[in-house]
Length: 120
Image (cartoon, rainbow, N blue to C red; front, side):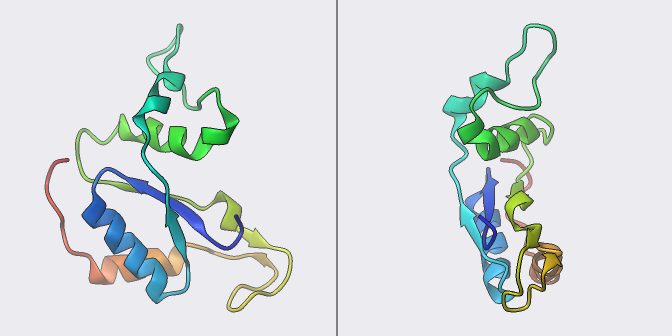
């Protein structure tokens, strides 16, 4: 939606830090499951991996599963901010147009970050 971004990750402590930072700066997130039953949608007959799944209704999840192939077991979290990138009318601190959603969240996360673990 336009008011909340999705967050997914392989380390709940890291996802919790992202969620806490989001709450502190009013850039709300909603955790989606990293449902590995969708992983097969990324299989390809002509490439190592497809960059999007076959099910449009699981696009956020398959995008996160695609990214997971490139982190080599490190803890990670993914923010899907596509729906929050712009608003059609003023809404709190968000002015009409591009919102910059995630910039304040990531700054706050960086300032308060606490490493969770070295490998997932």
